[in-house]
Length: 215
Image 1 (cartoon, rainbow, N blue to C red):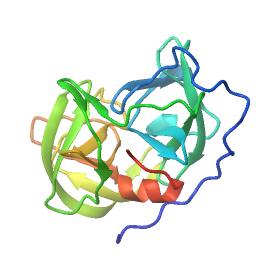
Image 2: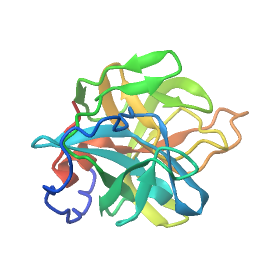
Image 3: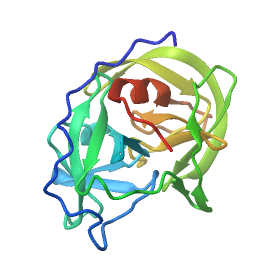
Image 4: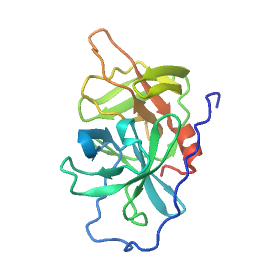
């Protein structure tokens, strides 16, 4: 990789006081909406795991260490807690029941898309983003190692695509190339009448920073 390595956050060791395989434990897929206090809404980007412990990735306002993440806007179904954040504002969320297996797939408007591995988003590679607002939109990676200024500050090492992001889309939407995970959406939406573009955090750098894997 030519992009900068994200800083690694510290995460607690998996607990032993949680029931193994709690009945009815939520099993969300990548691409589904998630929520936090204060009306915050983001997207569960990808489920990931490390040594049999399950986590998920997200970005935006949901990437805050200690923040509890929920499956519903009423904040009644807790999914987990953010245990680490990279310096590119990507959060690692440890599930409430971390030993319960979650699906490694991504939910799209046409069904579940299996994820088999992660790939580097090289320039020219075809990429598709799934979103509850615009559905599946595809384009091409046009640049790497981009620096973009956002509300929380400047984020470096991003990839740029020809896929526009409309207003109302939540951060964290997953980018895929076939069955390969490419990255997590960063930034706000825009007017797509003239074409537009979007930026995402390459997934391979995030996985390396947290020491986790897609599956």
